[in-house]
Amino acid sequence: MSKGYLCIVLHAHLPFVRHPEHEEFLEEDWFYEAVIETYIPLITVFEGLVRDKVDFRLTMSLSPTLCAMMQDPLLQKRCLSHIERLIELAGKEKQRTRHEPEFHALACMYHDRFTQAREIFVDHYGMDLTRAFRAMQERGCIEIITCAATHGFLPLLRIHPEAVRAQVLVGVQAYEKVFGVKPKGIWLPECGYYPGLDEILAEARLRYFFVDSDGLMLGSATPKYGVYAPVCCPSGVAAFGRDGESSNQVWSSKAGYPGDPDYREFYRDIGYDLDFDYVKPYILPDGTRINTGIKYYRITGETGEKQPYVRERALKKAEDHAGNFMFNRERQIEWHAARMDRKPVVVAPYDAELLGHWWFEGPEWLDFLFRKSAREQKVFEFITPSEYLREYPRHQLSTPCESSWGVKGHNEMWLCGKNDWIYRHLHAAADRMIRLASENRRLRISNCGFRIFKEGSIKSPNQSSIRNPQSAMPLKRRALNQAARELLLAQASDWAFIMRTGTMVEYAERRMKGHLLAFTNLYNQIEAGAINEPYLESLESQHNIFPEISHRVFATPRPNSLERGTRGDETDRGKRRRHVQ
Image (cartoon, rainbow, N blue to C red):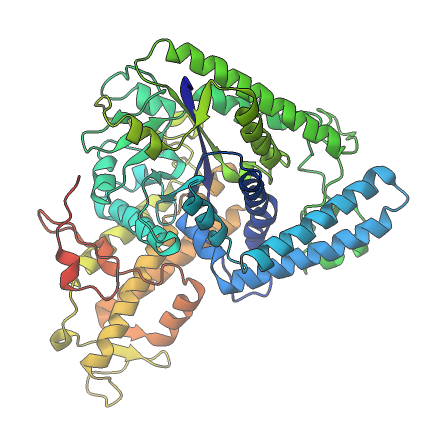
């Protein structure tokens, strides 16, 4: 019988990047790289564990924006083209390196990996990887949780509770559409929590969330068990705290596993190393060099003279590190179990993209961890948060303090001199959206009375080209719904984060300003009763996320009721009360 539990949590998220107006777009590569280097390798690990009957448990969040990209036909087609170009490049590399044994073996490895990725992507899952994760959840191996709609950093949006509520409710609805069940828990973007947020989570019938260790330890009551058991908020929603020790072993840039000299070096890529004419077909059309994903060197150490990557040595190191991680969790759980009246749970959350993309051997490390733990120890079992709450339904009452898992545990990563300008615009747009949504809970045919642009010019009320109110009402609803999409996309925490870190700042600013401009244009058109339909159609085509959204999700709730407000066809059904359990 085990003495405690280990809860591995992977947070998978990418911002919604989709540019049908361009044949190729650099930032879309974020998605293609993650598919090839993280999501497919993780799926391969899960399938191997199931095949070999290794019992494992994993909690994984798949953000709504990521799921939307996984299911988008345009991005699916472009991702397939990206994989096929890599297969072609790896094939050329096999020929080029045929007289260089240390590189030739790696070229063959990459060719095999890309070919297998294509098979999994196309033949197994029809280019929709959400099907793979859904199948694993239905097997009971992983527990998939939701996230806020566009990964908005909720503590900095709370000036408008309706905006926070919209982020949560749209995220829940998007999850239900993809996975066919209601989510049990939520990954708060950047683990960003503030007191009172759990009330909104309770309204959405979410059972748990995660906070950084300081969020639990500095809460309204000092937790009796530290971070090794959840606390229960007054709303009834459970909060699990991140364990710092297990996190540092993987995350730390100095002491963490991914920095080992035998692991693959991320920053040495043939897209930069090889002759320009050779790699030209596989970089940007303007000649800008980019990563191809084919890398031949290991970290080696803090030196410019990198040594060739040796795959066998790296896998042996991943196995050793999995054993070390397992050993440390055994000792940690034994120590806490002796001092608790219940089994401790160690919560170890990581960005999913760390495994495979940044830490090439990360998926193999996870595979070794599950297999070695099943064979070699009986101190702990793997568990999901909902399983732990079933075993221990009663917990200490406490409200976590405001916190995040960013720098110093607070909000400065998303609010600093480099990005603070965005919030006055986000708050102004939220104020407008809330008013529009509240005033237009039910669009009445009798008083629609607005005009329509057909070719960009305003039609006066007495012109015969004006449509009747019956046909005009759906157009107004479309404009309101698209305004909601634009605001949600502008609220994504990714843009503030990118501005803070100084990478791809121009793109982040362009996205932020573009969504806010689109929202403002729609707002002005709705207020003037003159909607430019071609303009609206262009936005609906480009920013096509959340097809079932209703603008009413931003409406101020009526007293003593919680409107569902996320389905476009709901009217009176949206007024049903939902009781918090």
